[in-house]
Length: 431
Image 1 (cartoon, helix red, strand yellow):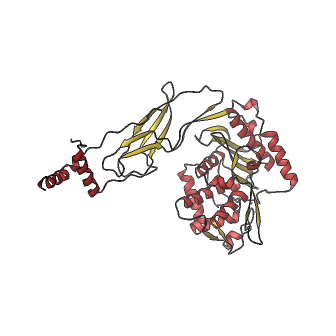
Image 2 (cartoon, rainbow, N blue to C red):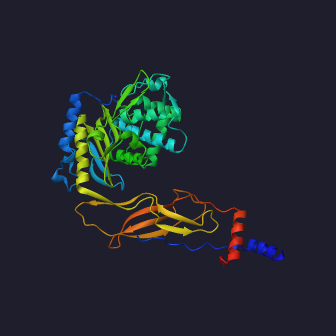
Image 3 (cartoon, rainbow, N blue to C red):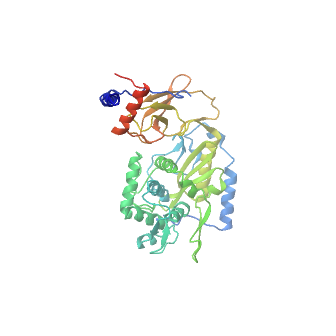
């Protein structure tokens, strides 16, 4: 009994001296005008022929010149971006401030998906259309005042039909008023560091001081793609709303590329008098996902054709190598006084290298630096960095490391029990 009491008193005195274990390196090397949706057979046949003529051809003269505007001669501006790395492959007037029509709705979609993911709203929540929402006009799903529809169906209407009424209904559902929702949109733009974007409404209707740029739209599209759920809406060519009612509504995607272009699965069209015809398109082949932006086109046929020219150029000339994914454990560290004895570190984002197909395959090495292991730690916190180096030891890429699980401090009783256990087994260090 005296021995046990002595051990207990000794352990309490020793707790402040308990030293953090050494890090264990594990694998460090290696006016929105009603968005064009003409469904007559002649229109579909015409767009089909445009896709077939362009999807397999690439202008060889452009293959080594990312500034060659002949890829999109009719567009006011445009950008081709690799979605994984954010690197720009092609640009034309990328920072010019212009009207972007319904491409505005991509920011609204980001906010909707963030609210879903945070649990603030749910897909089966019921949204009631106000008189303001139902009276929007332009591209719409013809909501009536007082009509109820789920968040899921509203999102279908926004993503596929570019519905102004559904967008405003969701804005009011989330923020109370469209004005407050637009403030949220502009705050999101600021968080993304965009300098050439400002919104006055959530729909993209022509209005003074409502603008963006090709580059900013590409960044917004890339941010939207981080919410993978969006592709479940934007990739669908046709669907229905009010399916079990007498007012069944046929949804047809305004983005025809999702039907006709290999790998296309999004993202957002736009058309107003001021913006003309615009498109933010994304397509994926193998590991390479591209984002193509064209703004200010004269009609939908030219818009689609020039968007496909950008995508063709990217797929025909570039490749991507995924070095580490967000699921690859690059290091494990042991922590004292933590709810988990070890934590695993992974990249916050995929680590990838974009290069020309004509470039030789290279080998890479990694340096790992731990900058923060102070408890508590949660998923998404920056714990360190992984630095990628080429064969000449040049640093070419850097990515944040985070933890795979939330880790907290042990409370007093947990720490006391751990200390006693370690003393009994001899697993303890002193300073």
